[in-house]
Image 1 (cartoon, rainbow, N blue to C red):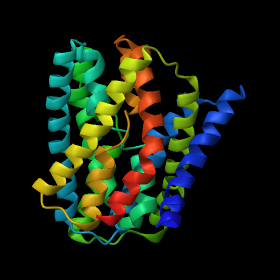
Image 2 (cartoon, one colour):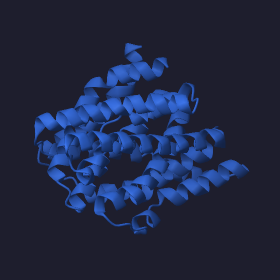
Image 3 (cartoon, rainbow, N blue to C red):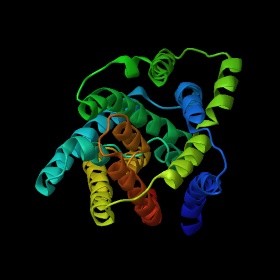
Image 4 (spheres, helix red, strand yellow):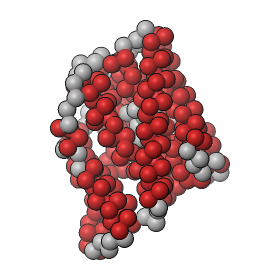
Length: 293
């Protein structure tokens, strides 16, 4: 079991470390360009290829979508209650307690832990979370709603097309599958390296408060993952994916949105760094649990 857990965690940590060391060495890393490539090309390709080729029922994917919605609601309610008690800004901190890093960290962990089936289920969870983040999430942080960011996200049409192919059993030409696999394979290493670069550039403030909020994020993440998987009667790989995706640290997107809409970005940056550090430390125990489940 120790060797199995190490085989899952080590590739993720090594890729993050490459980005972290690269940035600390003062070398140039074009984060906007890499983010653009991942957002508009490699992630949609990964979604399309995985969902088009995996042997998975439509019910299983819909269950992941339902789990994502349920988890998001519970995170928002519990997070809002916590922040109200603590007297902290909802617009600044609620997104950090609501949005786990289901992309950069969640997708590679689910792939390495559960194979192609785990990746497909994680993508179903991730795709719904992206929609929520770019609609309700952005509207809450910014104070206004805009559908522009949602319309411009290629992951959504990629998911819809792949679902149509899955439902109707449409045969996709091999050259399309080969191309989307080749491009999609860029996604996970680029996500992890970019995460490492981001962690190296973020600064920590208000350490004590950030630690408590980070522990709350990880704690309610695990608890909500258990509750949602139990409530939806999920078993096996599906249960493991939901628990794993819910129990992850604060998403880097939270810092980007805080910076974009001037919601105390330095505070959110601290939560991203500390929650990720604590998550890495506790990851072996989490992986042991989901593999045993």
